[in-house]
Amino acid sequence: MTRAVTNVVCTLVFSSTYSHGDSELQEVIQYNNGIVETIARGGLVDIYPWMKLFPNRSLSKLKACITVRDRLLSRKLEEHKASLSDGDPRDLLEALLQGQTGSGWGQKSYGSKEERITDDHVLMTAAEAFGAGVETTSTTLLWILAYLLHHPEVQERVQRELDENVGCERAVSVSDRGQLPYLDCVINEGMRIRPVSPVLIPHTAMTDSSIGGHAVRQGTRVLVNMWSIHHDPQHWDKPDLFNPDRFLDDQGQRATPSCFLPFGAGPRVCVGESLARLELFLFLSSLLQRMSFRLPDGDSPPNLQGRLGVVLQPLPYKAVVFPRPGWEGGVK
Ligand code: HEM
Image 1 (cartoon, rainbow, N blue to C red):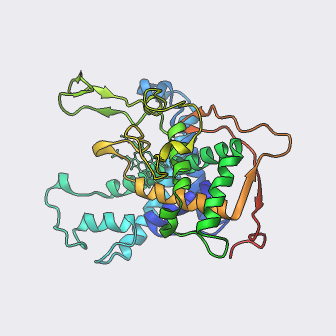
Image 2 (image 1 turned 30 degrees about the vertical axis):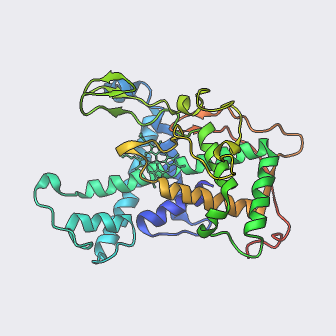
Image 3 (image 1 turned 60 degrees about the vertical axis):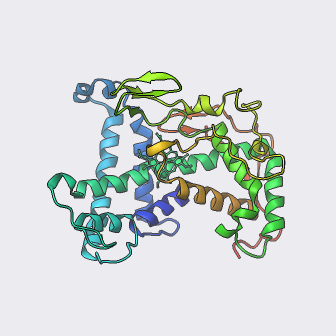
């Protein structure tokens, strides 16, 4: 799952699409995993930065992974600079480079030093797409599959919807989304019940303000408790129950309650929301069209408690995957 999602972000950022087992993709996955594993383990160094002077294995691993990441992204940046052209950018690096030089998209050249996009801005923006776009999407997929193992009846209903609206003669495409409302509900319910970011990225109030009648002074650290919003019994009936139907109204149409905010809200809302929704839809629909997931004989269903690191992850679990009728021969 991580490999597939990483591949999507590589295509978006620097137009490289890798095939299975490619060593460069392996390198990207390894450094990304290393960063995800260690970044939330900063512990005391995050609070007392001077403690970085003492030996710290997590910090050393984090630095080593960042060095590999920066080397790879710098190489991609140089390759892009060498082939930079005007016109529609082919990927994020090219769009940022065009912004840097003022070429393409009819942009003006930036004047002062402070306004200029530096190479460092370009590299860090590209790095952020990996940091924010891989673990979130792959973890959401793993949570949804974990819930489907707990609720085989939900998996069967999604597959019925797929059979009736897409069939097994062709692959699912984005244009099928309108005809697959129940799958959308399953995705939403997965993101509601296990938000990968239970407490959103810390924000700082830029001006004196208020939230729900509470005064918030300029400079105050604001933490949004998404877990509590998504489990508030005043807004959700039996919030601890996995029930995709809560995203359908009385007429069976899609409904999105106002307190459903898996991507945050306001000016700092997730910039990758559309991409993430597209990925979740295409990965899940393609998987469930072609195969079924069940528990290995005698195994208990996945632990749904999760473990909090950079994101809220399910604990590792096993599933038996088998082709659905009509897909025994593999991809069509
Ligand atoms: C299921 C997948 C995803 C979920 C649940 C998710 C969720 C979020 C949330 C909750 C935030 C914080 C919003 C806030 O603090 O107010 C965020 C920020 C962000 N996300 Fe996502 N995200 C996902 C996928 C992606 C993808 C695929 C990308 C890009 C490739 C991405 C890029 C970003 C960036 C750059 C930010 C920071 C935005 C800012 O601070 O202005 N995310 N995301």
